[in-house]
Amino acid sequence: MIKKVVHLFFIILGGTMGYLYLPGIVQLLNVAESSWLSSSILGMIVGAIIFFILSYLLVNYIVDFFRWVEDALIKLPAVDLFFGSIGLIVGLVIAYFVNMPLQDISIRVFSQILPLFIMIILGYLGFQVGFRRREEFMNLLKSTKKDKRRSSDEEDIDSNVPYPSPKILDTSVIIDGRIADICQTNFLEGTIVIPQFVLGELQHIADSSDALKRNRGRRGLDILNRIQKELSVKVEIYEGDFEDIHEVDSKLIKLAKVIDGIVVTNDFNLNKVCDFQGVPVLNINDLANAVKPVVLPGEELHVQVIKDGKEHNQGVAYLDDGTMIVVEEGRDYIGKNIEVVITSVLQTSAGRMIFAKPKLLEKAL
Image 1: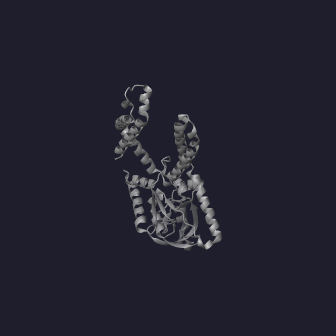
Image 2: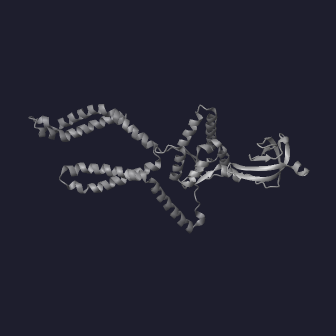
Image 3: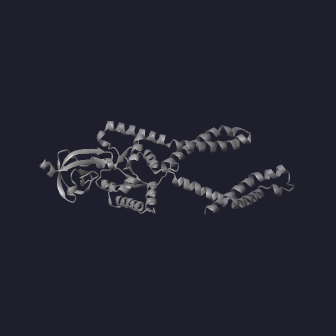
């Protein structure tokens, strides 16, 4: 269909140019002794035929160019496309007012050709300014909204409830799986955003030749299906992408800045980068550590010793939340349920570790 449109456009363009310019060219070259050769109708027919032949030579290149532009526009995020279009419109409006005085100049170069170049240049510059400065415009709009919200809060505090920011899930927190349980308990407010590039990474992991990676990727996809179909949370798929950024973590940070969202992760490094760039972040591991039960030295617990520890005569047990308990002199109690007395608690970056002794040994002492 698009090829037919291109052919039709070339025929109309060639006929128009032949009608307007071919008689003048014939008279300029002084090759027409009869009036019919300098006829505008003949020029229109000849121009249409010439451009129709040219269209067959150029149509494939033009169609490929249109498809490339179409794909590029589809991949652009809506925010980028919006501000780029606004900049283009502003540039064309400025070009219109700049070209108005040039219309009165009798020199053809200044009255017809120069305005076309001015329109193209200002339109391009307007699009680039709107596209590249979109974050500043977004921040300006956000600050305006915040000022309006603040003024309305001062007038009526009870009538304005702040809208929760969208939560952007990264690949690691999806594969981890605990995010589904957190969503089920309604601890996360607002819309859950799943970027398309995160889905692509999950699919790539699920298609891996390594069995462990393949299982992790499929688990992540199952978790997303559960969140979308079984839980009462609003889930949105962000279709946009950032072609100039290659790493998924960097794209997440960029997306959080664009939509004013919060990154949800359990990746320690991504957490640090978000903190450094001023992007809000929620870490599932921090939440898990915060809700672990508090135990103090001297308390008594009933545990089952699972295996031996690294040091001599040590045994290892676990709380229900996965916290490891190192039982001194507990190797002889492997496979048994015993009561232990907490001796110390060690908090590390990897979590919490508890040291204890069997209560029977405490009584013996």
